[in-house]
Length: 328
Image (cartoon, rainbow, N blue to C red; front, side, top):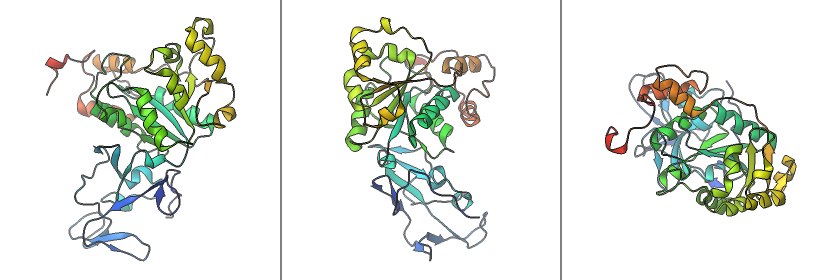
């Protein structure tokens, strides 16, 4: 069966974005006539006895979920290689080791941050509709580590990162960043955007936020600089009270508002666009409440996320335990 084309994360000549792909193999590996690196093994398995298989580097743990410092991660190729047949990879590597920023460095990005406590279809559908409306190929989801504007998330950062990864594992145009979870201190959006912009000075960045968040956007840390680093795409209800906006935010909206995606795409940052998305009445609070009462939230969030929640025993009480009572 012929493999489908690789997704847009891949550039030409074996590169991801503008960053070189570094694929690590164990000692003794050889390359076949197609340039595939293989190593003999013995034992029983789906590929039989003495078959060849692609191997991950022995020093790396073979799970995508193990994020490394400095925004690096390990990624199993089936997670990003949109192939008609990935069975050859399921029992081995290669594993891809690269900078998360490099993995989408060649193009524009739609950004969505949040606690994702848990992530659900309301998040995913909204950001996907914005992506399609703007004609941007890639999405970057950024779970917050320590959100400064709200109470601590119910689930710890490790679980929220894992749920987000599970939710999009089958969608190669969506990446997940651990940058805010790995960074100590409050998860200020402006710091994340500075890091992105330093590596992508000419890329179009479009950050999606809801209407409620926009109405208090002037309370965000260094909010005016955020508008110089990214576009804002505001989703939500029509008929919002523009007259009730704080003066500074109202002036920013007057100067920066645009009504068409093409205008937004003409420059890397600085515009504010309002975009109506499908209204899905789903909230993380609702999902946590259902779970705490022993009811199922199925079809409000991806099945793989619900499976993870059930396996880890998350959201079994209506609110997070105080830190001194939290289980070790």
